[in-house]
Length: 186
Image 1: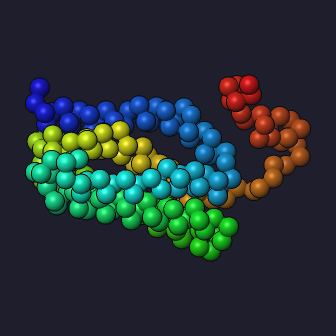
Image 2 (image 1 turned 180 degrees about the vertical axis):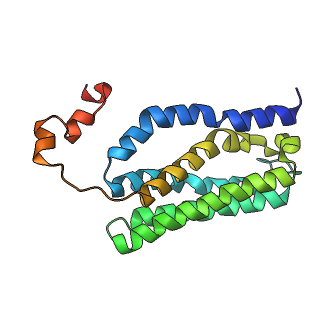
């Protein structure tokens, strides 16, 4: 099997375990969280994207990693990470927090889509070895980032539900506590 084929298999299969994990453990909890808390959790994950600057470090990546991929990937991740951090810092100011949440998600999605585009145009699978120590980023980390961007945008777009359940719901066992999974009751 060629290195390019292995890289492409890794790219596709990188989404499978994250989608399974996200569907089973993360999404059910995000849906039940307060809107701000759900976005804070997602922003916290994305605040680590400053790490994308590693694509610019000689010795970490190979000398033949295309600059057309590395530079945009590095600075796109860096910008997304900074916007996510700013959102976290602004959480007590909704008029600042919500635009920053929208911004880090839109910048982050554009970054990842353009990175996939650059990777295709520049034939990154054939140069996968040039990723060096950063090889795991597109295989392990990027799928989770893309999935959480989709979740964040969905949560932003869905209508707000009422804050308190009706008295009938909580008496009938329809309150928040009854929505916990059996494992969370331990």
